Image (cartoon, rainbow, N blue to C red; front, side, top):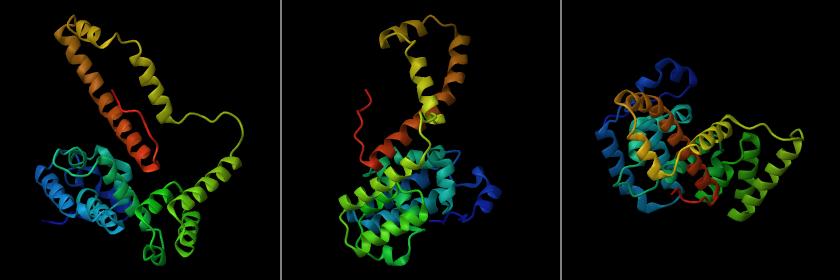
Amino acid sequence: MDAAPRYDTDTDLSRVGLPHLPGCQAEDAGQVDRAVRHINATYHRRKLGLALDLGEYLLDTFFGGSSEAFKRYGDSHVSYRSLARHPDLRVSHSFLYVCVMVTVQSRVLPPDVLRSTLTVTHYKHLLAVKDTPTKVALARRAASQGWSTRRLMQAVAEWQTTQGARRRPGRPRLSMVEKSANLVSRGTRLLPQPDGVRDQVQTLTDDQVAALVRQLGPAMDRTQRLWDALIDEAALRGVEVAARA
């Protein structure tokens, strides 16, 4: 299998741009099938080594080895999205996401931490710590003192509480993600019950149907990406969410 080109810096990434990531704008079925076989063949290991190996493999195969490319394009990469939803894949979309994020995180952790007995669950808890020096300090303490995953989770929660106390009081501003979700939620409340939607659609002219498909297509795609990102984040944090009807 030909190796995908690697882009290790932001400069390289901005220079080559999105179209040069293999399979990014149009599905590469061979690339996806090879990835399914590779992941299924190694999935039984189920250890930190597996997560790091799969994370590096996914970054190399779909994102030129660049963590910035993954953060920037993620599920907009057509072939990666096809892989995550492939019916023969033995792992979930969330598992792939965790593998990549743990791998990206491992690049800022010192070798002594990576050689320690910390598990994938330890690394998942550390993902919530965005400050790199704090992340490294907590990882070293967890490794040297033999912290359980629960103890590390408590330490991360304590750090988050401290960070929250430093923020200005008052009602926090809504993020663009929250604002967008609120607009989608309010807009869909105007629709009738499911059976009524089909009845109303049948009254539209051909031109109206075509115009609405053009208008809603990109919006539905972006909404699906937001949904996938939220489900991934919920799995990453161990947050239970209600299944979508």
